[in-house]
Amino acid sequence: VRRSFAFTYPIPTDLKDIVKLPLLQKAEPRRVREVWLEKYATDNRRVAGTIVDKDVDVLLQNTKACPTFLCPLAKGEGYLTLVVQWQGKQCLITWLEEYQQKGPDATPYLCLSLFDELKATSGLGLLRADIVHAGEISKPEAAAIIKFVREWYVSENRFNKWVKVFNQRPQEFDFHEFIRDGGRVVAAPL
Image (tube, rainbow, N blue to C red; front, side, top):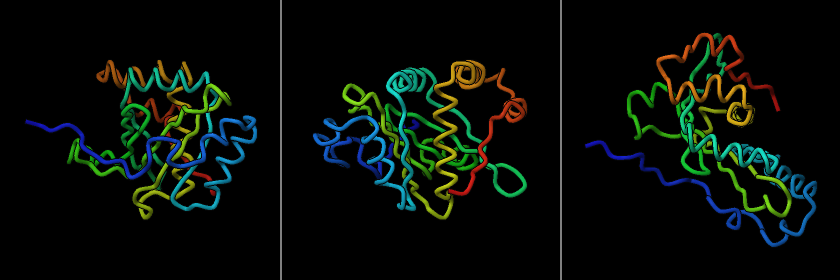
């Protein structure tokens, strides 16, 4: 009997546990974005981002339908491939090699959370990625991974051509063609 993925998130899953939610609910969207990004600007283990409300809906719908994907990260002369696994509004990211060896017991190296509590008041979703093992993934790499994940799950063309095929028709997924079509992450210095 194989047990399901059991992991206690090392990060809060509710926005009220991170910020003074009533204050942000009263703020203008521009100010919400500024506060959120400034909060993590100098934090070496966290990356913040925002996503507009219509994209929050698309992201949640697509991650529910297709919770797993690959994220090749440029390292040295090649790539190290990460496995992206969505579980509701949280996403666990680990190395493919470790996932192949340990399955659901693989250690997450990056945890991404989507907070949608401000969607109705500010039209924004807030993203926060926590680097679980700082020696494995740098902050610029984490930022690039989060951008990649957001774009590939929200872009209708990329989602349908790659993410959906990977999840629903894996025998048709061509990893090398995916790489040639831009399916890779190259981190720029922050």
